[in-house]
Image (tube, rainbow, N blue to C red; front, side, top):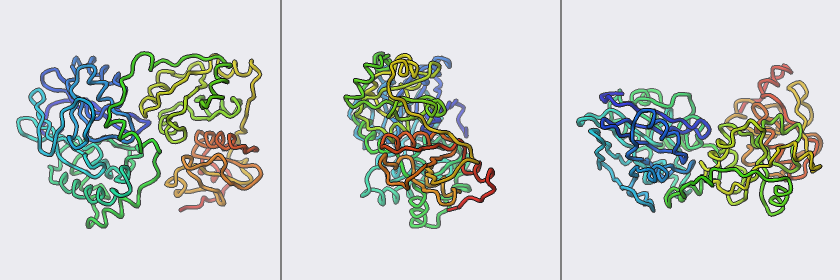
Length: 452
């Protein structure tokens, strides 16, 4: 890091595409920037480094995850955030150019609105020398965070503010290390790429948004590259403003329920989510269950497809990580976890309850109508001729689609199985899932894909 001899440790949430940072201070303390709700990774890292977390610092009111600042505050940390964010729990509010003394280092707030109105970036200084920037969503690797998440009326002025903010940050030295919060895989981000840490100089020369000729060109590039985002983004800013409830041991548990209890919960409106691998779901699942495989992206698809106020029931394989499942639910504010089916699919079958199946096919077996449920940016890179393209997040279980056998596809089979389970809930039959990608189909058949 330019000019500063402290250690910054990244804690990356691969599923949501975000990075938090633990900054070591010279006095045995540590600061966490933009923590996710689960405090364990930060506490474990601090314990390993023999540090005490003294502050939890927020760059903005997050829309894509529940903040962990209250959890860290309950364990002794002081919360620091933008005064303009109007947090409804104890914190220290900062404004532009205000500074926070931190064990020999200084954290200086820089007003960088755009991604959100209250957004602050933080400049880390040692003996007055700037050496690192925690940019939140104001400057990302290859982009800036999207400006359309607060309200339609604010998108234009926030885009204008984002332009001013990046121009301000470009006055910093080229060798300054930049630590963004949002990165590849985040629906808040406007660019991909594998790198999560960068420098001012690298972005000055390699960020296409920063190469815009003027503000109008910047706005066209930024807004023209925005894709869809999960609906839970529209409510988490307020959750983080009020302060999420603290999680206790009971909230972290996943009760085991009998088949009869699961049946009764479903009758009362609970949704049964089968989190097993898609191959297991296809081979047999409780009729009407929703398939969302437990993987890093589980939380995003849960938040996209399931209403937050519905009780959740789960079907897992014995070896799957219950703790990870619960943490992913809590990460986006889903807390009505009714429990899991004790005994799994074997118990369901032993009870003689209705079961569904979905046929998996290879790339050389595709015929009839095809539904591609990838994101629009993916299908634009190449899709099957004649395929219907509907993003998974926009799929209606009662979607009007051509009759007859329907092959659902994504990039491998996971999202396609989720889509097939939704369509089955809507009464669709003769569903098949392509195990593979559009490229696999093209290679197997020798047929070129349609671009654009």
